[in-house]
Every structure is written in C-alpha cells, then in structure tokens.
Image 1 (cartoon, rainbow, N blue to C red):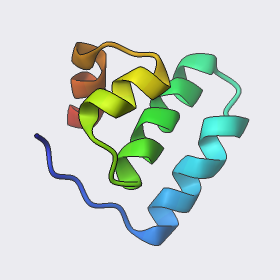
Image 2: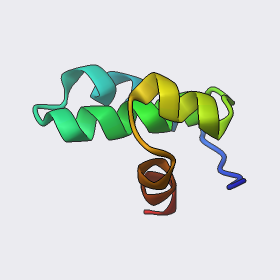
Image 3: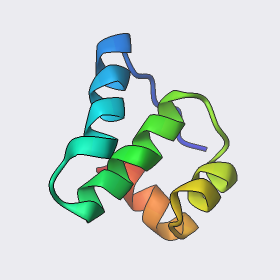
Length: 62
C-alpha cells in the first residue's frame, strides 16, 4: 500500500478540483486522490471513484 500524506490545504484543493475542474478525467483523478486523503483503503477508493486498481496505482504514483 502506498503511504501518502496530504496537508489540510492540499485536501481542500483536491475537494474543490474534484467538482470544478473542466476536464472529467481530471475530476475523476482528483476524486480518487481526495478519497485517499480521507484515509480510505485502495479497494474502496477504486470502487467509489469508478477506476481500476491499476489506474488508481497510476494516479497515486504520479
């Protein structure tokens, strides 16, 4: 499992971008990262964000 930490400001920015970014793929990525910032397990994040486990790993490694 990847261990990432997010500052409160970063989590706030992710929360904003997951709804307001003009590109839907970026919104999906921001949703996944925001869920990660909330401490959810990778399996739950992938399910809730509607992405595969491989896609989630790519998002988290970028």
